Length: 166
Image (cartoon, rainbow, N blue to C red; front, top):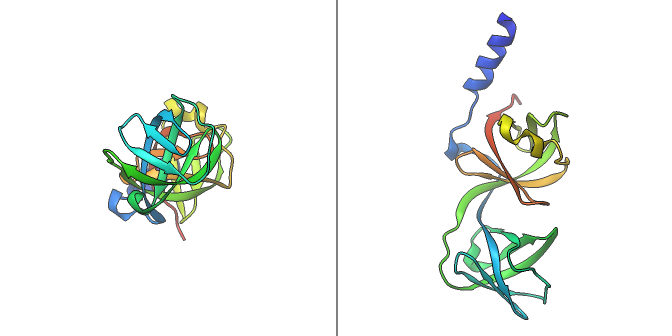
């Protein structure tokens, strides 16, 4: 019991402050599609985007747009597809985070092993979702290290990011 308690205290002390998350920094926007025309996309947040190719996108579908700077070019994920688009006009209030790889996870979905030698503990209420994640997928972790977006399905879960030993 004492050994388990010491291990737990050691993991808690390794919790990373938000500004120190390693990985590829990104801006991201998670919204819903309001309308889709030939090569233009309107989102629920009021922003308009130009598509590089015509896509059949459903109104009300969730969409995640991410990139180093959303105003200069971005990649979108919606309906299981990825595609490029560019910002056109409207209000734009992106969030900051880090793009990482999900390498592996415990079978019960409690602990995720991420790239950059990071681990994430999943809150119990979100473990039913994380149990179905697959390794070698991209994820975005919010700058505060408390939310993870799984890119293939755009599911969001609450986490706590921990450092692992090198």
